Length: 337
Image 1 (cartoon, rainbow, N blue to C red):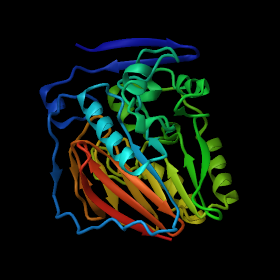
Image 2: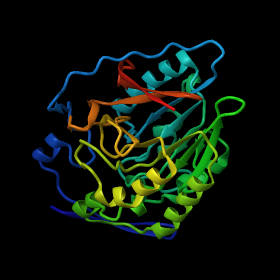
Image 3: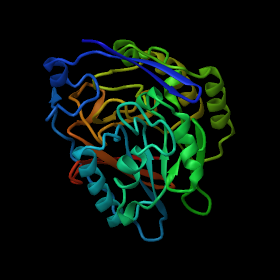
Image 4: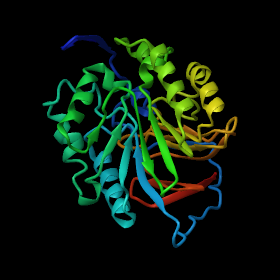
């Protein structure tokens, strides 16, 4: 049986065609669902030896967390949220980056949607997580009313999404800052493989305006560190794989203006790439669900079955930590500046 639903939310009119899922669908986890009980790392390699540099007295730094594809409202999201709270409490994280697909399976309809409480406010209710959540939109957030996620941030709470793409800076010390450029990658992802497979028709904006905005943000930036955040990964060993369209559009700008890190989700695993054309790429899509991943040649680390990241950033060093769903540190790497 094939079901079709018309959804109206303001000016949004979406056609969602949901195909019946087979047991095979569940086993590989191609579409969003929680029936996959465990995922695996294919071509598993030994985790490289790592250490986390000790804090140096007098060297200031900022600490933040990141997770993507979290918005299931299920046990997996709750487990990761509890682990994030413990890690945040131990080392005083100052904010969280939410990398999209904030509300499965179809985003939120309005600012009063009950999912705001179920999958965000109550989910991340620990005292250590009463910090800003800087969020970007994922493709599933587009299936209903993405504008509602922008509007919700105007209520003055932790949720921070002033527009569909935006930029903010954080001071590291008296002379050093980091700029975070938060993209709305769904309109830029011209291939939209997943939406084509699932029969979803999405409204979108002119992606060229966003690319022009991105270039201006980068060209005008005086920040020592530049981190770009989006939902869709450019390079991935996961189910979606590399995204040639996004690589062609975004990577030339990253290279031209010296972007240090591109951080994304979309694929439901955790992964750190070896530098590609001088740029570091990380995938953090294990905030609420999971899929298998292949440890491919250009990966320095790959893991699944959910988890999140923590970052410590000083004037000359970025430490990237990978935690599993239980909050156990599994890998860390450093990026020197």
